[in-house]
Length: 318
Image: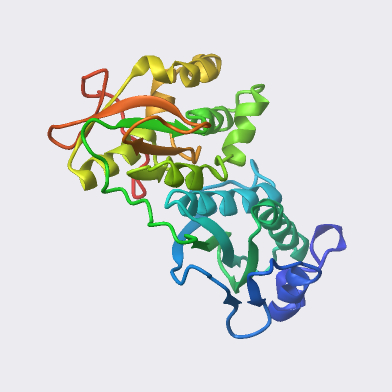
C-alpha cells in the first residue's frame, strides 16, 4: 500500500484502475461508444474532424510539488481545448494517455481524471478513452477532437495587409506565475494559479470565426512566437502596439518587480496563457481587443515598428 493505505497502480493493475477512472462518468450525446471497447465512437455532424494532440511531462511542463493532480488534469485539457478553439471549432471529445511510476497511489490517478472532467464537462466534451502505462515519471498525453459545424477552419495562413490583430483572453499571467513558483516568491496567488491552471477564452474561437477571422492561433509559446507563425504562414508583417498591451503589462508589473524581470517580456514572450490571437479584416467582435496591425513587408513581428530585442518565447528543446 502507498502512504495512507491507498493501493498503488501496481497493486490494482491496469484495467481495475481504468474501471475506477471511468466509473460514473456521463458522456455527452455525441459519444455513441465510450470507454470499454477497443475504440470510441464520436459523432461529428460536420463530417470533418479537427484533431490536436499535446503532451505534458513531469519536470518539464509541470511539477508535482507545485501542482495538485486536479490542476494538472485541468491544465492538460485546457491547453488542448485551446488548440481546437483556435481553429474556429467546438471541442467534442478527448483521448488521454497517462504514464506514471507503478508505485503511484491510484487515488492520484483518480484526482488527475477528476481534474480533466472538471475542465472538459462544461465544454460539453467527454473523455472517451486512452491508455495507462508504467513510466519513470508522470507523462500526460491528450488528443482533442473538434467539430467545425459547417464553418471553414481558421488557419494561420489567411492574414492580409490592412487587417487588425486582436486578442481574446489575458497575456503574461502564466509566465509571471511560473517565475513566482520557480523563485519561491510568496503572495500573488492569482498569478500562481494562472500558471497552474490556464484560462482559455472558451467559445471565443467560434465567435472569431463567425466574425470573419482570417487567421488565428492560441498563445502557448508566447505572443511573439505564435504571431510569428501567422506572419510566416501568411507572408505578412505584424506590428504590435505596446500601449494596447498596457493592461497586461500592468497586471504583472508587481510580480515582475519581485522576480527581477521586465514585465513587458512576460507579456510578449511568456506562454501558456492560451489566450486566442487573430487577424480580422474589420471591426472585432465583443470579447476581443485590438493590439496591432497587419502590414506588407518581410514576415515577422514588430513592437511599435521595431524588432523586439528580448526572447521570443518557449523553445521545446532548450
